[in-house]
Image 1: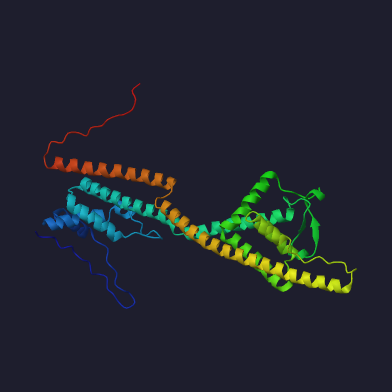
Image 2: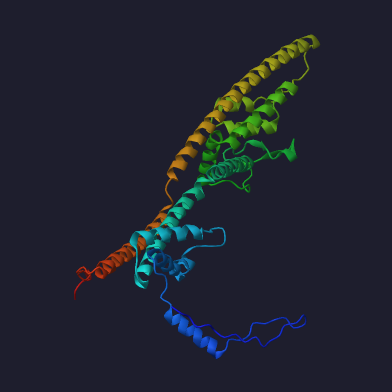
Length: 374
């Protein structure tokens, strides 16, 4: 096959100040190129034909649009091309329609893999933050219980008429709450039920147990230093422990300083009674300190149990997160079903076209209308 040689116009001279430029194509050159293009028959070998056939797929519209090539969700264009190549070698399409059907099949498989990644992401979205989320929830619950405890202590809703100390900043100041102060705000019945539940839950979370530990340690240090517990700590211990052990809470409540006695009797007898009272105060302080140590040990055991229970609860919640949420599952299933319909339709169309091309008698597809007749 001989090809015409296009003529070239070299009339333009180049110089340092006038760099060479590509001359415009002449009409004779354009006509020669067109005649040469008509004589071209493309590749002759089977390998060359297969290679050329895949060019439309590699650079086609679907191949460019289906793969995410930028951003955090970037995908590999080479992997998609490799998938198209393998499907092309398996189905051996001939013609534009068969090639597009193969590309549609590749697109469906690519999107189905994306569904699996989305499902994995929905599961990990909760699992990866489970420990932090549970810690925050437990902390919020514990702090809420402590807040309700303080509110009920200040309002004295269940201690009407009892003298309660209001806040550390008012040390030494006593305020009468409840029935003796009609204008004093009080919790409703439902509010008191919430407070009781919060007091019970103090033993079920780490913030509450830490609060109770701090109260007992403060009381123990005051007993060792002064021989009794201050009014502020006594009221707080009673309020926090009365739902757990009312007797212990009551003992702490009455563990204040000894009352002063009148000294209108003989000095010798008064001195003897003071010695006895002093010894009695030491014994009482020792009993209170021993009880406090016992409850500190109980609280340590409760802390260990709370940790174990929290680990078990976190493991159980992690197992429940092995599936994505219901709304995400429904969306993924509907999308995957849509892809399956596209995939099977494309595979069926490709098979029918190839059988027709090979000369087989292919009956038309059966279409069934399931709609209700009127």
